[in-house]
Amino acid sequence: MIKFENVTKIYPDETVVLQDVSFEIKEGEFVSIVGKSGAGKTTLVRLILGLETPASGQIFFQGKNVNETDSLEIQKIRRKVGGVYQDYKLLPNKTVYENVAYIMEVEGKEKEEIEVEVPKVLEIIGLKEKIDNFPKELSGGEQQRLAIARALINHPDIIIADEPTGNLDPYNTYEVISLLEKVNKAGKTVILLTHDREIINKLGKRVITIENGRVIRDEKEGRFII
Amino acid sequence: MKTAGLSETKKKGVLSYKTHQRITNLLLIYEFVHSHKIRNSLMFYMLTSFKRIFNFALQDFSRNKGISIAAIFVLVVTIMLVTGLLFFHGVSQFLISEIQDRIDITAYFKDGTQEQDILNVKDEILKMSPNIKAVEYVSKEQAMQAFQEKHKNNAVLEKALEEVGTNPFLPSLNITTNGDPAQYAEVSNVLQTANFSKFVEKVDFSQKKDTIEKVFSITSNINNFGIALSIIFIIVAILVVFNTIKLAVDSSKEEIGTMRIVGASDWFVRGPFIIQGAIYGFIAFIICLLLSALSAYILSPKITAVLPGFNTLGYFLSNIWILILIQLVFGIGVGIISSFIVIRKYLNV
Image 1 (cartoon, rainbow over the protein chains, first blue to last red):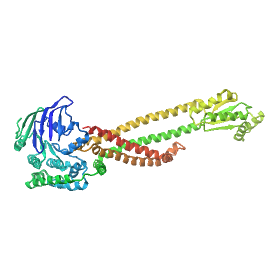
Image 2 (cartoon, each protein chain N blue to C red; image 1 turned 90 degrees about the vertical axis):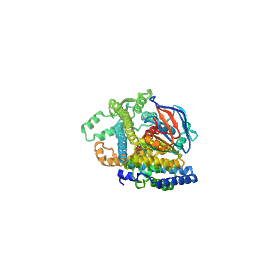
Image 3 (cartoon, chains in turn purple, blue; image 1 turned 30 degrees about the horizontal axis):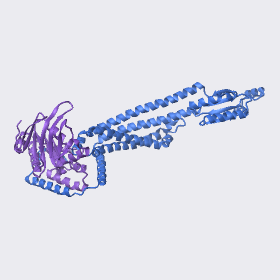
């Protein structure tokens, strides 16, 4: 589904963030990518979404070379990815409902469909009461649940969660992780990027460890060892 | 609705097994719905997108009142500045034409010049300079009559005229130019040609030549200066508007990034900002039109007192369409173009 081939990324100020990174993630996998802050995890996500171009190497999304596609194709790829981020990346001027609806509107879904599906997913995620609130009126946990609702609404092929629990307390952390597991069980590919040792050790899934921009370990039932 | 307390959030936080079950079901429903969905036509898709972009613009506009009001205010000031320049142009044109209308040339012909020769000169002047306002032939007798009419109550002058015995006046051509220095030169040239100069006694300018030249240089300076000043003002105004809109868009920088990440197309991201720019421009235009109508109405008598013959309200009404055009094009144009340029920077990701 996602394949990195000898990817090196150097930022304009000459810092080498990723060096010769290669791995493949298959459909339906739950993969954790671990590493210290600044190890290059977020850069990996930005590369998959075509927000950055690698200095060398290639990135494939469902067989398509991300850096050789036009902007229309990139938009299609981005719509297939449900993203959950540490800073939530919600739209501050839109309500809870509108934040989720926006994703469907981007795809050009019909109004009737949006009106049925958005309240449904918000109810499941436990935000039905807050449907008309703005993100700044929600707690951190609620904001992240909203982000997950948004990631799920368009029925993406893959969920990429970049430090989704970074700002959450243990309760909400557990909740988010078990949600991701659930989504994975329903057949979706999940990539979890984190530096939280406890989460990784509890999961017992495939772990790719990155240190100083290189993949130093890739284990089927990995543990957090840095 | 108020923000829930943290404890409440925690209580609701952990999802039950049942809830997880429902998520699984939901995902299955999605799968079904999406695979059976009949694709909309492109036309319908574009129409829906446009409607949504427009709604987003209205929503953002009303939710960011502070920024909206600031942007409209700056646009109003800018448009009023341009309107002021237009008004200033009208006043200076009025003044210039007032002065220029008073500039006449009188060519006196030698005593005994045939009327036909003088009329030939008149034709020649009109031929050389077809835009000349008027050339009036005044014969010896008409000049005498005009003199007598003017001084009929002055016994001394009447007496003096009687003493002379003959008609001392010379036939003449009164030439009214439109004040253009080129015409002035053309008329002089005609009068100086070999054929005609033998008839001409002298050429008199109702105002001194120096004065005329001064007026020409002042008016052309006013025009040049006005144009230069207008250009500088307009550039400054555009920069101010641009920066205000840049501030408005800058505050949405993160938002734009998010929209890109979820796969929104360029126009889906850009559209609301550009339409917002147009809304700013349109509201500013309405305000400016009302403001300028009101000030023209209120200031009209005062300006007429200073500039007799200049009707401010009349000037406003006779230029209403060009004014609307300028205000509308300027307001909406600057609004849209600023948004477009500013947002381009953030779309390059």
